[in-house]
Image (cartoon, rainbow, N blue to C red; front, side):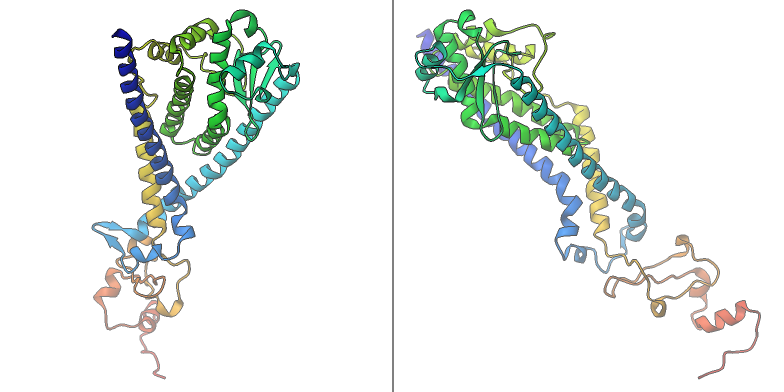
Length: 366
């Protein structure tokens, strides 16, 4: 009866965690979409400028003035995106190179037939050809490789663990292998580095990384979750030991380690989240600037004004003298209207120019 109740609690916990994962993925996708679309939509899709065409004000806000003020902000976000791409590419190269250098310095071999690792892999339905055994591995076990992933395990595990525990380790890593977690998490890391100015995105990614470890635990604990729990405890180590430059088994964070063990023992720990109020506030502020600057940049303001369509101000040409903007023409032509001009609607530009030169003669009609 107690075992059935524990199994039911575990089933309910897994169902709630699946719902939570869907929410996390939806939030991540929406955040990426909201960040990227205002940056490039008006560059890639024609017709977006028609939304604000023919309007020069939204309530008390002057769109042309906002365009002038927020154009540098929009260009700054483009610059940040370009810098983020370079940073993400360098980060992925550094990770690949660091992992390659560590593994190339070790003596790595495929387990032979009837070897302990061979038998453990066969017992959990894992192809032993995907397993690599190494001496002096910096972490007990991990899965690495973007396109051809392999499982790397330390040879010392055969002495530290029982055969069932070793099989649990390989089952856990086999779940990472089947899901191609190294490639998925690497792409996620690339996105977070590209959009490094959105703090909430990085914290979403950390939640997804934690869930990848939990999902691998669920796949490995189908037979006996207590064996996997005891294995995790046996392989846990102090946080001060050196770590590989790429993600491995989640032994390095006490909070995640505690959550994994407790849920395998039948408890229902609070999964928590890396999101904070500060990170959400920062993301909201960045999204507001991106959306406003992107929308204003889509406003069709001309870069050059046709001379025959401009009513020149005789005494001041600063933007403060602008009273109205005519955007009815294609791309719009700026029409300056100041107090002096509007108070003398019967005077032409030629007569105004004559008055400025001090001449009292009327212009000769053509």
